[in-house]
Image (cartoon, rainbow, N blue to C red; front, side):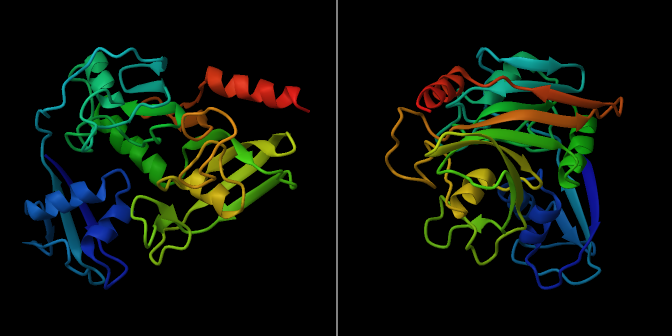
Length: 304
């Protein structure tokens, strides 16, 4: 069993909300389960999810040994960019969900990774997300990091929290972005009306920053690179939409009709840079653009 000890700040905040901000690699639903199971105590006493923290509260989180999930390994081919005893970096295809969730208990990246790695996966993030440190949306492609042990997971989760992991995405957006570079600094939270969406207008939005630079202009569309400073749900999609340049193919945050036949947003996690959890060496992985993305760029270039 892993034990995490924290001292509370932000008095008056619900403990589940406080912990989900401080422990970004543990989902809020998993933290709520730990609270329900009595695995989280404040000043030595178990508390419920609606407990409001006080300045200086001593919080202890006990993370039980991972159970054997009812999630089955599946022999699904993986596009492996790098692998050693600590980490696995894969190039996720379009249409693949990262981890099991209601409605997606099979054919996920986790099912494929469980088959490939066997027992060699970190258990920190619960039974549904073995090895998963961060995630990308179902229709986003590209580099994804998997941890094979708890040591690697803890170190890389800390890098993620400190924003020292480099994550650069390539995207095609609607409209002509006039400036060569820019930054969107706007908090992101759950949409106040449509709970499946995220929004920069949410009342309890969390700090979110996206830097972008223009790679090519096509008149009605712009090819850009986005670098994440934070990693909120749907961050690039929400931020680019908020400045009037939604991602091409994104029917959730952009136009309902797309002029090209696409499966979801034209967004690819291209560059992933980390300090290796064992050697301390900086490593950078580059996931090549998927064929549909390269083909679309060629079509747009021909129209110029």
